[in-house]
Image 1 (tube, rainbow, N blue to C red):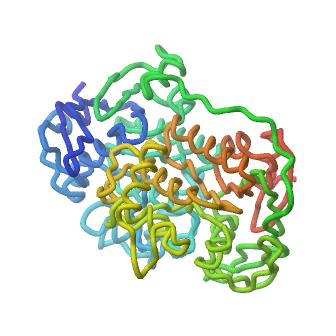
Image 2 (image 1 turned 120 degrees about the horizontal axis):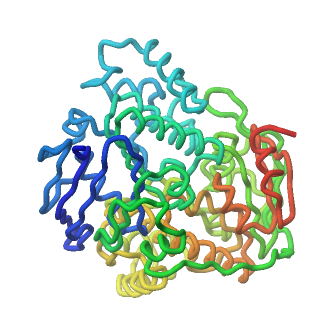
Image 3 (image 1 turned 45 degrees about the vertical axis):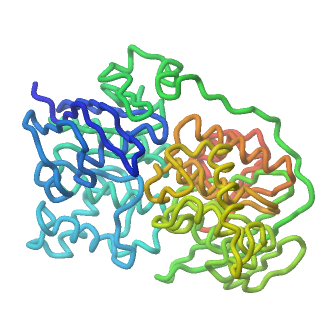
Length: 502
């Protein structure tokens, strides 16, 4: 059988740093092919070449056995290649239906000849088919991260792709949503199409992948193996060179209440309820994990804590001080640090250097001088130390932040926010898209912050992460806190509350 997608001897560098070195990969029709590797291993770079975002420096790309020059997304679409990116390609001030329509304006079944009403109907049909719930008339900037992920998946599946590439598609989906999507991908592949699944979740490889390829440091180290021939430990060693482990600690009792939210209520721009009489206490030296299906108020709560959204009703107390309309600067000055869910929107300035991104939040505390006089030598020294301590691969102080892989960009945000004095840390989906070792490192960073007396609010749609790290777990559903548990917590009890069961 002719391979659907092939790479032979592919090289790619950015700013002189090699991202791919003689990489190769082959995906057949009729199969789900998992692509594994650490952050920065080259997985996304390789598939971005397939979808026309990058051109290889050297090497050959073949589609259905024919050499192809993919010089842009339209060329990729014409070849039947569609990709769901880890970082979304959506127009934020447009609706779900409008995003789908403009995506397929040049080609595909949702093109210019199809009315917006017809696009809305097909969105409903596809979303029901794969078990998602999405309102086609919601604006993108009112959606949670997981709802935006659903939009991206629906958009590509409506495009008629024969080769479907998904980069961490289940990173912000619940267990139930993930299973429905993966089952649908198996059906899709069974229709004679090809699915490439970039993932860090080994259980997805063993449950749904027909073949697995592993990359490390830009090179292919294992190609086209049957997952049944490998163990999880063998796959981990292939990915990272050794099994990654994270410290397993007893739950912490916590100290004094550092941050208190009482009776918060908020509405979205479309008038629907986002937060409904929500109350939470964070204690020093403790992780409070907030679990919930995306779109149930987590984004609005995070925006409130970041100073991006003002309270409509309720009370916000930090360190015993009641705050009315705190700005991001005021909150940061009082020791509230944030790791946002969308690192490239709220966490980093992509066109600035690693050094500038690292220094920006420290100018007010005079660590690197002030706005009137900046000590560039101190910034350079601090950045180099952060790169080494947080193992930010592919980074130099002068590298542009947008050239870092998703995981290494997240490490940069962590390095900046966890450097210096903190009282409260908001960690919103901090390991989204990270590999096994990077996830373990992030969790260890959170535990280290707890040892220093920092109160941590972990907002995550990855239930495994919430249960692994948290000392106390709350469940949010339709903007309300519907349950709280002290660790250790029964997974099924949290899961029932997440999906609305008493």
